[in-house]
Length: 631
Figure (tube, rainbow, N blue to C red):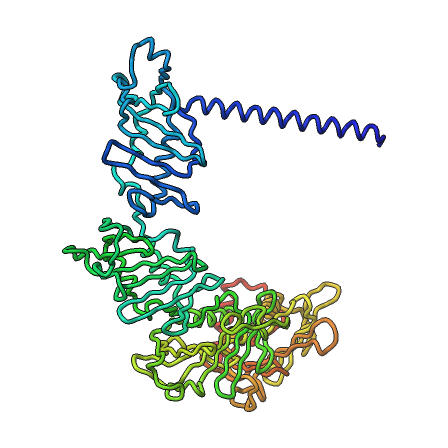
């Protein structure tokens, strides 16, 4: 492109951008001016840093913004209700302009400010706008229409506005005071201390949002239970402002004997303290409280005290495993010398890796994980419990480890396993305890627990409990030949390359029963055991598998090593014992599948037609009858 053309296009683009900017800016300014013209006074609420509201001679309240928070500074030093302050200032900023009576209008009408109630205003608001002062005076209502007269003290005109603005005016000092005992939200709290009644409970929240108990012992805390305490504290409201400027708080039981709640949102500067003292006078439903360093005493309801006095165990996490069942990628179960290990691959498929590799039943494994992660702690044994040896945890009967994906040992990828976060190991005692419970402990925690014994009824280190019942999974289109051995006789069908149909080739040749062969392929190419019986069985005779009653061999495309032979042995409840030749697993085959192989694969031929005869049917019948009557 020509450089001159490029420069020209650039100048045009800059020019259009500047024009659009100026038009938009002018349009916005015009809109703002039109909006301002509809307002009674130009009051920029965002710039207000303080104000004094005065009504007559009995009420004068001063508020100031300190560290972006509103506080009353006179007649009492206290936290202000931010909502009430915003409503007051918002009402002033949004006042609509009605009739405007200028000084010239008043001169023509021969009216004085007193006639508008503005010589001695009913109330006034003196605003501090960051160094600039603005005072608004409010007078009487207009004789017609109910409008309210007001005036900027620095200007001459009188303005009529909607009288509803007075709905936001405080009737007393209390109307602007914050009735919440504490500021902020429960979500911001990172530390919580509860003292009183000779106990101390300290809790801290980690980066993941989980609560940990640090005193009187180190233990997991229940997130919902702690949140319930915090919600109750932050919802606690002042029922009455009992006293201000208090010098001796002990008169209200707010001394070293008081219940003390300390909350910290991150550092010392964010710390808040709540003290709860004795009964508020004769009202048994209220107690005194204060929030140092405030010098005020409040009367508050006793409703939230039950939460503050929660027992230690009520705040503890009763989950046995804290890992989510969906995150588990490996399981290890050890019972004495017997060990079982299962792993989940990237596709979510489970397999047995120890004691020997095998495909696992994914649904069965997931049910096992769900059951384990759903176990709840019945009781906390802690320091009052016998020593680990007495509980049977020094040499536990069971060790059960759950590992998350990415934890060391869960996958082939190396990762740093953090105890309790990436993997958790449960130690279980075999010693029975009262109420159908057993003792247990997480290896990374010092605290022993009691859990229901019934929750571990499916705990096992037997591989067969998790092994998949899928025995064969073959493509029926790859089967070239089927050989059935039954009662010493062998029957064989082969697939014809030209027609792709099966035909009987032994012991005699002939067409095969297509429907029967299709049923056999459907059953045995997708063979699933009714149940698993034994692995690495040495005594196959007791299952009738040393000399099986019948066997079926499926020969596949490729060399002979690709063939699979199903051996079918003795009868058992609901089926027949069976196994795949060369494999270690004895299983039960449904009886219907075994009966399927009792049928002849040769397609039945039609019976020969009856010989022709000249006799009538009746005559032939009589002849036969006569023949039968001869001696």
